[in-house]
Length: 483
View 1: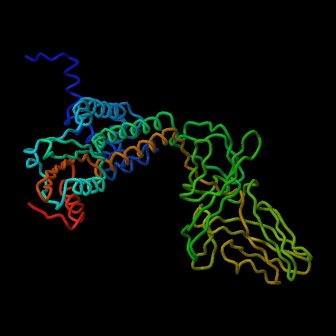
View 2: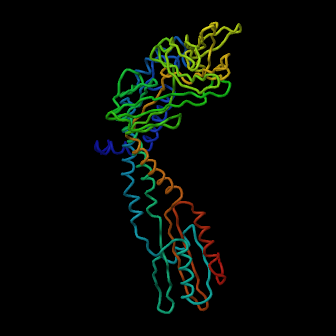
View 3: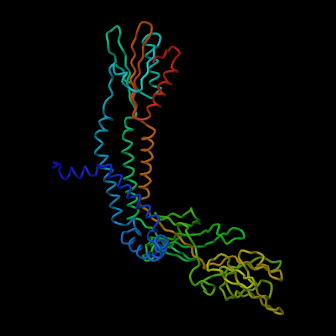
């Protein structure tokens, strides 16, 4: 029967390395699942995923099970947060439990060692220096300082043949590096929890020319007030030449606060807009529902250039007319297509509702002229030329598209950055720095001084020994090596 108290049993449980491995494995496995299963997504997306994994017959059941277990919103689930808390507790308690032993090693003062103990160290060296003790002392002191030590000195022996010993250590605080790493992990996890619980991750589909003071949760069923307004001034897509594959899409955004525009910024993918803790990423785009050319809120922007004249820009809706300056010709925008194409019989049709190849159908009339018509395509300048030498260019179709913005606010991000900084310091100290000790004994004889060196390091023994050899070997040609 164990004599341990409940507190001691709990303490012993949380100091277990096996517990740390188990918790880390569970968190890692859960994170993999959370990456595969889209978080806070519409049910249809994950049902399709489960259909591929388990078959259509089992997809609904798998989705219900995943939802019940919290895998569709894992980072807000109680059990995942509990795992993080337990992992942090395990790291903290393990560190506290082992800290006194490390502290004793760090705080222990370095003392000179016995002559007989010089042969017990793994790093050792013997040599002889010709001449007296003062010259040898100066040479050895130079070597020890070159190694980065500030040595203490002690003498022992009779007055005529006193031995001299230098001893020093450095890097003792690097033994705390593992605690810095543990601390950094706790800080990073704390920052992640802060970001999940107090932050926001959602979206905003913002049509050209419109303003919004809210964003929406990933499910789209919850409004999140921003505390300011954001407006899409314009949106444009640039395509690869002779292709409908987007090369780049750009949103021109304005931040409005107190009725005034306080910030204007054009954003592209990987170049977001940041304001008051919120970050707006360019993530998608699309056609505003219902804006198929019949919606009077949409504006067609044209550059109209009469033959030999100057270009003038006009804005009108589908169904409205315009005139060509200096002539009696009148044009009417009869139709609009967001993605125009032609079949094998040269009949026009709209491929999709995406704004890949916008075009307008223009009808031209004038006194003494037969009615003529044709398609003017935004991306193909040849279609802008009219038979009489006039030119009508489709510049833009304003108000027909929306920019899809990913909206994020993470108040824990700076905590995570601080944790990463601590981790970098801890890892550098743990891998590249060490606690080094050295003892150098000078024993004078008649015409020379015998020198014994003993050293210790808790990491990279071979490298430290090589450094000691290199420093003492090139110190002076008067040194003769032994052993």
